[in-house]
Image 1 (cartoon, rainbow, N blue to C red):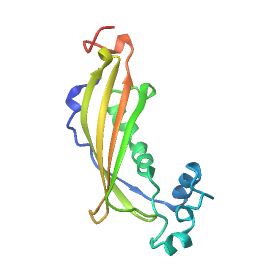
Image 2: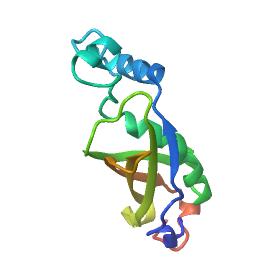
Image 3: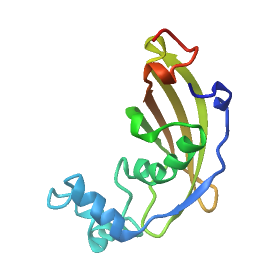
Image 4: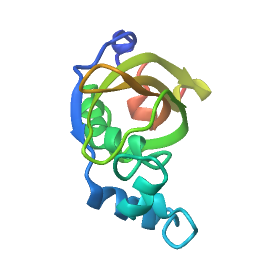
Length: 158
């Protein structure tokens, strides 16, 4: 069982640089290349559309955050091979671009047992800001940790 006292924990913020190459790879992976969305992979097209550089595509921020989530889960005693991605949501306040340095400030909102303890749901909200403190987005995520009868402890019947 995950220690429920992690609920309410503000995780130390971390920064991530938005790089053109990664934006282009992401755009290609999600099918934005060749689909008329040239702003996501062509700097000239992005500037022609009023962007200072390549804009961050929707859901890209989730990938940046995920790179740092594994350490957090491990620190909580979670076996990351037993984690399922259940839900994610985004509220955008502004567009980030290649060259931006973003700060992610995660908070573990809740940890709760589900299905008699066979699953534990971790809800995490993260605010993303630019170096100047201006808001970029708020991220919401729910993860499920699959428990085996021997990892359920007193959280529910086996």
